[in-house]
Every structure is written in structure tokens, then in C-alpha cells.
Length: 90
Image (cartoon, rainbow, N blue to C red; front, side, top):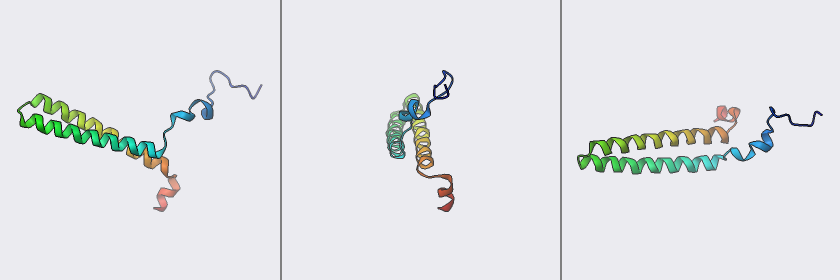
């Protein structure tokens, strides 16, 4: 009976094994979001030059959101790549 998995228990190795991304995947996602942020900043600048304040603000907001996502993916990649004691040694 001890080998049975109860409904409230979670088999981390089986249930969530595919849920975790590798550091390389997180770096790639960070790069993607930084790239998208740059594109949105260009669109915001073009809209501003064209006198479209609403579009400029919308693209600025999208750029900011991509930047936040990029930084988050970067942080996750670093945290997953190094153990806490390894970071202290750097």
C-alpha cells in the first residue's frame, strides 16, 4: 500500500518532468523577448514620428512587457544553470 500514489500526492518525476525548461531554452526565450521588445520600440518611435500618440503608447507598453518577460527568462536561466553554492564561488 505504501507504493500506491494517492489522489492528493504528486509524482514529481512523472507528472512534471516535461514542465521544466532547460537553461538553454530559457536563454532562447529571453533572446526572443528582447528581440520583440526592440521591434516594438521601433514601432513606437515610428508611430510617435507620425503623430499617433495612441499607437506609440501601445507599442511602448508592448515593448515593456516583452522586456519584463526577457528579464524573467534570463533570471530563470541563470538560477537553473548554477547551484546556489556555485554562484557564491563566482
